[in-house]
Length: 135
Image (cartoon, rainbow, N blue to C red; front, top):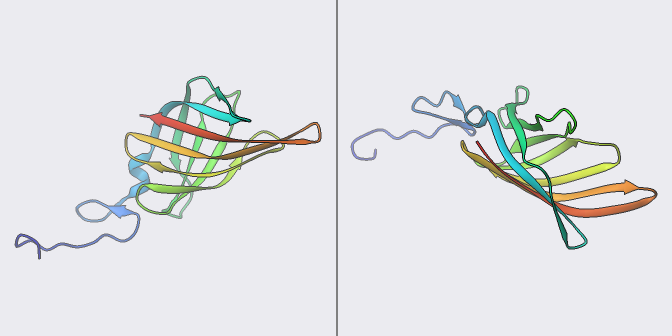
Protein backbone atom coordinates (compact mmCIF):
# COMPACT_ATOMS: atom_id res chain seq x y z
CA UNK A 1 0.00 0.00 0.00
CA UNK A 2 1.17 3.48 -0.87
CA UNK A 3 -1.02 6.42 0.15
CA UNK A 4 -3.85 3.92 0.77
CA UNK A 5 -3.64 2.62 -2.82
CA UNK A 6 -2.52 -0.81 -3.93
CA UNK A 7 0.79 -0.73 -5.79
CA UNK A 8 1.54 -3.50 -8.28
CA UNK A 9 4.62 -4.06 -10.37
CA UNK A 10 4.24 -4.92 -14.04
CA UNK A 11 6.02 -7.89 -15.58
CA UNK A 12 9.30 -7.04 -17.26
CA UNK A 13 8.89 -4.91 -20.41
CA UNK A 14 5.21 -4.14 -19.73
CA UNK A 15 3.80 -0.88 -18.42
CA UNK A 16 0.60 1.06 -17.98
CA UNK A 17 -2.13 1.21 -15.41
CA UNK A 18 -3.18 -2.38 -16.13
CA UNK A 19 0.28 -3.57 -17.29
CA UNK A 20 -1.00 -4.39 -20.78
CA UNK A 21 1.26 -2.09 -22.83
CA UNK A 22 4.53 -3.47 -24.17
CA UNK A 23 7.35 -1.06 -23.37
CA UNK A 24 8.80 -1.46 -26.87
CA UNK A 25 5.44 -0.40 -28.38
CA UNK A 26 5.88 3.06 -26.82
CA UNK A 27 9.11 3.51 -28.81
CA UNK A 28 7.66 2.75 -32.27
CA UNK A 29 8.01 5.71 -34.62
CA UNK A 30 10.33 7.75 -36.82
CA UNK A 31 13.40 9.37 -35.26
CA UNK A 32 15.84 11.72 -36.98
CA UNK A 33 19.55 12.19 -36.35
CA UNK A 34 23.04 12.28 -37.81
CA UNK A 35 25.47 9.40 -37.31
CA UNK A 36 29.05 10.22 -36.32
CA UNK A 37 31.77 7.69 -37.11
CA UNK A 38 35.27 8.16 -35.70
CA UNK A 39 38.19 6.47 -37.47
CA UNK A 40 41.79 7.06 -36.39
CA UNK A 41 40.71 10.08 -34.33
CA UNK A 42 38.84 11.80 -37.17
CA UNK A 43 35.07 12.38 -36.87
CA UNK A 44 32.94 11.83 -39.95
CA UNK A 45 29.41 13.19 -39.53
CA UNK A 46 26.85 11.60 -41.81
CA UNK A 47 23.88 13.39 -43.29
CA UNK A 48 20.69 13.72 -41.28
CA UNK A 49 18.89 10.41 -41.50
CA UNK A 50 15.43 9.17 -40.53
CA UNK A 51 15.32 5.94 -38.54
CA UNK A 52 12.27 3.73 -38.17
CA UNK A 53 11.79 1.92 -34.85
CA UNK A 54 9.45 -1.09 -35.00
CA UNK A 55 8.70 -4.15 -32.90
CA UNK A 56 10.56 -7.27 -33.99
CA UNK A 57 8.75 -10.58 -33.57
CA UNK A 58 7.09 -12.12 -30.56
CA UNK A 59 9.84 -11.54 -27.98
CA UNK A 60 8.64 -8.44 -26.09
CA UNK A 61 12.22 -7.26 -25.58
CA UNK A 62 13.14 -7.15 -29.28
CA UNK A 63 12.83 -4.26 -31.73
CA UNK A 64 14.70 -3.03 -34.76
CA UNK A 65 16.00 0.31 -35.90
CA UNK A 66 16.41 0.81 -39.63
CA UNK A 67 17.24 3.69 -41.89
CA UNK A 68 14.41 4.88 -44.11
CA UNK A 69 16.89 5.94 -46.82
CA UNK A 70 16.76 3.35 -49.63
CA UNK A 71 20.44 3.96 -50.46
CA UNK A 72 21.45 2.91 -46.91
CA UNK A 73 19.59 -0.20 -45.80
CA UNK A 74 21.31 -0.75 -42.44
CA UNK A 75 19.09 -2.53 -39.91
CA UNK A 76 20.03 -2.78 -36.21
CA UNK A 77 18.38 -5.73 -34.41
CA UNK A 78 18.12 -4.70 -30.76
CA UNK A 79 17.05 -6.22 -27.45
CA UNK A 80 15.98 -4.33 -24.34
CA UNK A 81 18.00 -5.10 -21.21
CA UNK A 82 15.88 -2.73 -19.11
CA UNK A 83 12.95 -0.44 -19.89
CA UNK A 84 15.32 2.07 -21.52
CA UNK A 85 18.62 0.28 -22.22
CA UNK A 86 19.33 -2.06 -25.12
CA UNK A 87 22.08 -4.03 -26.84
CA UNK A 88 22.58 -4.40 -30.56
CA UNK A 89 22.30 -8.15 -31.14
CA UNK A 90 23.06 -8.12 -34.86
CA UNK A 91 23.12 -5.80 -37.85
CA UNK A 92 22.24 -6.12 -41.52
CA UNK A 93 24.70 -3.78 -43.19
CA UNK A 94 26.89 -3.50 -46.27
CA UNK A 95 29.18 -6.41 -47.11
CA UNK A 96 32.23 -6.84 -44.88
CA UNK A 97 30.90 -4.43 -42.23
CA UNK A 98 30.65 -5.56 -38.60
CA UNK A 99 28.84 -3.43 -36.00
CA UNK A 100 28.31 -3.99 -32.27
CA UNK A 101 27.15 -1.76 -29.46
CA UNK A 102 24.40 -0.67 -27.13
CA UNK A 103 22.15 2.27 -26.40
CA UNK A 104 19.30 3.93 -24.60
CA UNK A 105 15.82 4.71 -25.88
CA UNK A 106 12.81 6.73 -24.74
CA UNK A 107 9.54 7.82 -26.29
CA UNK A 108 11.28 10.93 -27.69
CA UNK A 109 14.85 9.89 -28.53
CA UNK A 110 17.45 7.18 -28.80
CA UNK A 111 21.22 7.09 -28.57
CA UNK A 112 23.34 4.16 -29.62
CA UNK A 113 27.07 3.75 -29.87
CA UNK A 114 29.62 1.06 -30.44
CA UNK A 115 32.30 -0.21 -32.76
CA UNK A 116 32.30 -0.61 -36.50
CA UNK A 117 34.80 -2.42 -38.67
CA UNK A 118 35.09 -2.95 -42.39
CA UNK A 119 37.33 -5.20 -44.40
CA UNK A 120 38.58 -3.10 -47.29
CA UNK A 121 41.17 -4.34 -49.79
CA UNK A 122 42.44 -6.96 -47.34
CA UNK A 123 42.80 -4.47 -44.50
CA UNK A 124 40.47 -4.10 -41.53
CA UNK A 125 39.48 -0.54 -40.70
CA UNK A 126 38.02 -0.11 -37.21
CA UNK A 127 36.29 2.83 -35.57
CA UNK A 128 33.47 3.89 -33.32
CA UNK A 129 30.02 5.27 -34.04
CA UNK A 130 27.36 7.29 -32.24
CA UNK A 131 23.81 7.98 -33.37
CA UNK A 132 21.68 10.49 -31.46
CA UNK A 133 18.15 10.75 -32.84
CA UNK A 134 14.93 12.49 -31.78
CA UNK A 135 11.29 11.97 -32.66
